[in-house]
Every structure is written in C-alpha cells, then in structure tokens.
Image (cartoon, rainbow, N blue to C red):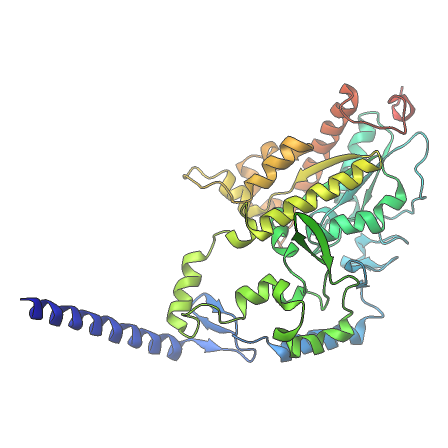
Length: 414
C-alpha cells in the first residue's frame, strides 16, 4: 500500500514537472525579448537580468549632445534642476532667473507687507501639464489675496524629485528667499525615489542623471553621492555597476536586475510572481520598519526641523495619485496603504492637509487628470482654494507662528 502511494505521488510530481516544463516552453516560444533584454508575454514585462547598457548609453549620449539647450540640467547638489529662464511645455511653463516656476522675479527678502510662502515637491507641485496660471501654487496665491491676505507663493517644485531632493532644494535655494511658510507637497509614491540613486534605473525614460541619496546610520541621516556624479561619468559606472560603491544603495538595481530570487531563470515563475504583485504597493519601500518607510519619515522630520529652526511654519500637503483616489473611494473592502503610517505622523506632528478628504469620487475620473496622470486645472484650482482656506484659518486662530509679523495686520487688507 505504501509502495502504491509512493508511485502515485511520483506520477503526480512528474506530471506537474512536465506541465511546468511545457508551460515554460510555451511562454518562451510566444514571448518576445527586445533589444535591451526585456521579455514580454501578454501584458507582463520582465526586466533583463543585466543592465541594458546600450539603452542607457543612448540616453546619456542624447542628453550630452543637447545639454546646452536642455530645460532640465545637471546640478551637483540636487542631481538635476530646471535651467533658469527656460520655457517649457510650448511656452506655458516658465522658469525665472532663479529656476523657480514663475513669470516674475523675486527679491531675496519679501516685502514688509507681504506674506511669503514657498512650495516644494515634485511634478505635482511644479504643475506639469498645466499652464503657469493654473498651478495650485498660483491658485493658492490668488485665493489668499481674495481672502484679504497680501501673499506671494514661490513654486520650487521640480519634476521627478524625491522627498530628499525637495528637502535639499529648500536648504540649497529655498531658504535664501526667506519664506514665512514652507509647504511640502508630499506624494507618497516618492518613497521609492528616496532609495534611488540613478534615475534611469527607476524609470527607463528618466533623465540621465544621478541623485543624492540619504541612508540612516544610527538613526541619523547621512548623505551619499554628494556631490552627485555628473552625466559624463554615468556610462563608466553602468558598465561595471555591480562593483560600484553606490550599487548596494540602489534599491531598483537590487530588486530588478540582480538574479537574487531562485526562480529568476524561469520565465514562467517570474511572470507568475509579477502577476501576483501587480497593483500592490512595494512593502520593501513603503511600510514602517522598512528602509524606505523609515527613511521617508526621517527626511520629513529633518525637513520640518530645518524649517522650524529658522522660525518658519512647516505645512505638509498630501497629494494623492489617481490610483490612490480610486482606492480611497472604492466601495470594496481595501487594505490600509502601507505608507499610512507616514501620513498619520504628518497629521499628528505638523500642519497637515489631506487633499483626498476634500474630494469626491467624481474627482478620480480622467477628466480631472492630464494624459500623464498629473492634476488637471480643476484639481489644481481646488487644491489652491483648500490650502488657502487652511492657511487663512491658521493665521486667524494664531495657530501659525509668523515671527516677522507682530500680528497679521501688515499683510491683511482692511
């Protein structure tokens, strides 16, 4: 009886193995591998085991050939930034002489009768895909003035920035303009940018730049790749990447390109893994206790401490993505996003605006979003109005400390 059972188990195992082998052959036969080593089967794509050197070389050489006219330029402290006085988006995106999105210049010191606010963040703060007068920073300024508050809002947002770069842009440039209130546009997806060093390894269509990268050592932030490697050096780095001292700190190399999983050589098992995790957050980046999660919290805390040390008010505005809103307004049971711990920390520790709480299910429709899934004009306008009402209430109740003013009268219209 035992022998019969063993034979049956063996038959089942052999059948299963033959089935898996057959499926592996089928997947390989009907899948396609591109020139850069990416394998695609149905709607799933697997990255190559090795870095796509030829593709990376083409992007680097393309940037270097056009760097004198590029609107986004290398910056040794930030990785990249906007070229001063550049014009983007067919003339609708204007940078002033300091590289701030604005059609006007600003003096280092604000006027005595004007409240100055500075906004930092990524493309959702910079306002990609909308005109200068349609960004939420511009709308915030307009709404404050409508409420009788003489204010100006300086937009320091830069596309593709991580939370670390937003903080460093405050330290490098923003503080020079002496704002009274500093707003951090928190887009939680940027937690993945905090553990990124080489932009092209996170987004293959990204700019040919490296970026500064914080690590936590004994609960203290230490900055790596500072000054950042210039584009001219990146190809040599990629050609021997596994031996480069920054390779262990590039999360997206460790997670995508290295064959660290035992099933990586199997197309079938790799595709199964990708299908199971599709649509999920990446817990290695977002959740409390992970490097990405703890690093994100530490960066926000350092940002807030730096702003407060100069007697400025620190405000966090949560900027949800469309996918976050779809989940937020879903009638189906849904797990709490693994980055909720960061949002709760911001709610408890700082002036905090959760934009999703002022929206309704209609706002998750494509009509409110650009083709690249940035906020459209109506969402920018609503965010500007909502932020203005929050700041006005903070001033009225005395909740906002404004050391430059004994009271609000200098910047309040009679």
